[in-house]
Image (cartoon, rainbow, N blue to C red):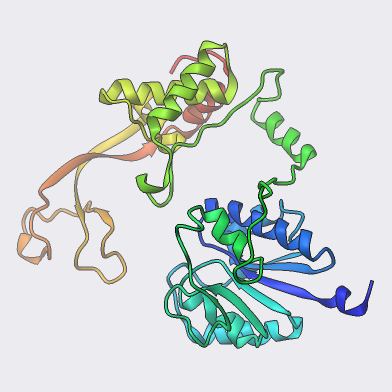
Length: 325
């Protein structure tokens, strides 16, 4: 192995969404196949570091100190200057945003590869123009950046395959009472970006129903119960499940102490603008000083929760044990 092979490294600027980060492993695998001795570092949101730790192709995951949508050129410049010491041979940018191109540019990485995106001329010197008909899939667009311009993709792309920590897996299963002989399946109908980025909920319901019909238990049974309950309650094949506490509150309402209070969307506050606000102050005698006027909506707001009871109810349901709500 030559000295150059030992020291060559590539910096990948990772995407901001969990599904895209999983698909990015296709790129990492292709890079590893083409350059077995090249190290791959990934600059990514802090939340994604545990996910990247499950990808054996990644040498190091670097937490991006800024949130999604934040520019702060000074912070990006300082990070790029720190990364100069790594002497990366290439940077590959998976996001298409202009701001994602600044750190590799400030790091003086000689080859900076990515799709044109937000008019990134100058910041990228290996600029690609995306042909959406040639690369209709996200994994194809990621994979193409691992290859020279106009190079054909492999006939079969490698699939993402996260590394499993079997010991930790068994510890978690035991801690939640799920270490029985039955196979487990967790269904997660939600998506951070909204309905446009998720599989339709009715399909989750169909999968859960099929598993229940086969005698599935544990997380599969739990998912089926929750989705079926929501579908029945709202009279629709679609259902979105929230957090465990919200579901318990629907099943066992008497575990909450509620009070009917005015609720509105805050439009005047500097720090709370756009948030849903519960106002417990009594404005009844001085509405002239309430910047919003009288709240048009009053709802039952939970002020106290029987946490121990809900925890027992939730864990018992996860474990497939019958328990009275």
